[in-house]
Length: 324
Image 1: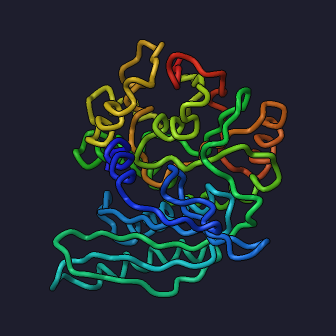
Image 2 (image 1 turned 90 degrees about the horizontal axis):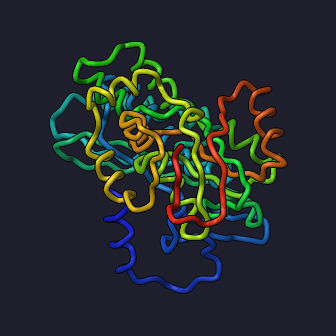
Image 3 (image 1 turned 135 degrees about the vertical axis):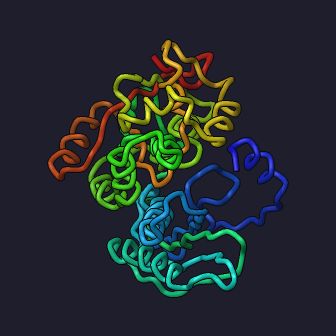
């Protein structure tokens, strides 16, 4: 669902006061956090969706990687996961087995336990995980703490929505699709491990709201940001796909919701589409004080982890995000 639909809907749901619920759905954070003791809090999240690839094992890997990411965005460690599946009645269950094997491979790569799940029959195959993580209550990384002067760092190229769409239509290459799959199955675990050594002010993972939509969540109404379009990494053929109008309905919804918050100072319609493109299992956007940003980038580079500085947080301006 688009960000506008969700924000309006969630305001209608009653809440219950609980001093141990540190992060709930009254904010737009990546997962909920519940305090169990002075030094342990549990992170809970769930994510599932239909397949965007034909290979069932690969689909399982992508869906699991995506679901695990919310825990990493909040500075946590994944400890366990449950499968959630919808599957057509009477279909070949060997295919379902491959999906589950793919998902399990990523849960195990995360060092976590896959402990069960739930399944129902449905006309469309959908798969994902309910994930539990743990974090120290005083070390939670929220998605709304960006401060003036912070550098914004992105840890995966964007454009996978356009690439998977274009590949399905036979318009983009196998090489571009393979690159998209590589990033969609790359855990954000190693980025999260490095983040623990640095004074991160906020972080979020880039998924359905696109790069600009998730940056908007980080900024709220408090501050703005300038994004340097030429510094934003993207899969090369995503740009050519955008030139061919190989965009998604999610991208159109993102544009409509964000329109009043964006100032595109670039004369580049294709790049606009890439920046608004919904991602599946995207990287993290991290904000960190400029004085500490190079140390973070250096450690990520030393560990062969992809990362690029893409912009900076500023005082509040007329528009929330300026792209130049």
